[in-house]
Length: 286
Image (cartoon, rainbow, N blue to C red; front, top):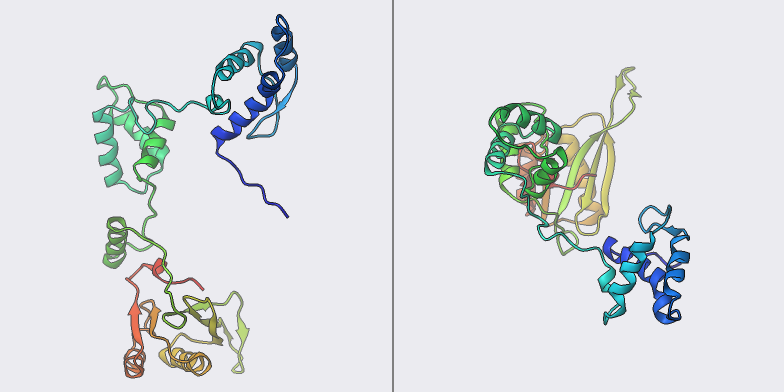
């Protein structure tokens, strides 16, 4: 089955224009019949290259396309949409607006682009500064990487430090090159409660252990608690099934950083690596 490869928007427009004008280049009309041919083309409907809706082009537009490509070596290139000379630049943004917007973002990184724009209007009102439109402000924020940042759920010292750490450094995806070079594990709460033998309702937790390179699930098991005993039991099951990994990455839960867990891994020669606090993006989500 063939898959459609979407070409850039500029190329799609150029191909459409060439498909319309191309027959006039392959079979030029007789002298005096060019206007009739262009009028016939202007009366037809064509498929919009982006939306797929019917679209028509005027006589003068078709005439401009025809004379543009008639003397060109490559008739498709002149039909591409022309890029703006100031692409990537923002001439409507004055230094005062840029400074105010940047300072405002540093103080309130959780604001939306619309809120930044409304606040700029209030701050710069009466200063004789022409404020650009909201789409310009939004495009500038996106171009500078000033995206909206989620606020920490708990404004603790660790959460704030993790947020600042994420802002300063670049986050990249990774994958080790060898199987059993790195494992990840985590507990996940079940969506339903179960009735235990003691007659109480408990929410079970699933311990998952996955290999980073192969994405093989080394072991899955349900538990009623997230303790070091349950974690070590599940790890032992994975070790007996798949052998020992070179390294194990976990979060900073109590069961993961318990001495029983860390000392046992050290005795087995397994490197235990913990993620930064409040940084779950560091390891694989099961």
